[in-house]
Image (tube, rainbow, N blue to C red):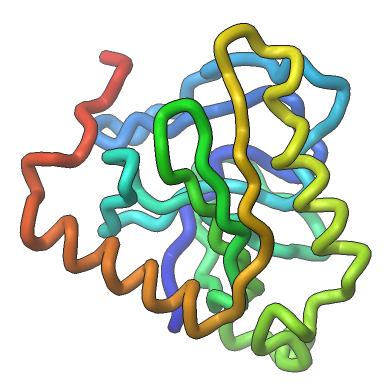
Length: 170
């Protein structure tokens, strides 16, 4: 299952950027309180509605980071299940679509174990020092479950387009 992922945060950044879904402008939301940067290029899948009212979150494994606002055509390979203080906040994991250098990664079991541990560690701890924030990790799941969640998010948006969160910035 391939999607366009809009990258908000390049790998290694502690700045948390967010794209205003109405204007397309990129805003600095906050600077992470912990001393670690995002473990992969991070953004969202437009045309989806997650349980939290936002488009689904997605990470794309890339050999070099891209800039905020860049759209990467990506193939889902798995998902890190988690909830936070606001509810369900799963993170889809993807690789560049139609790039033969990533053909060896088709499902979560193909991703190097160290890479999965590093990503999980980040999401288990990235809100540790932030007042009023908490994370409840659920672990990794494979491509089939991730694609099911993605399809549910597409269907949710189609059924309830008015439930999408309004842009928080003008």
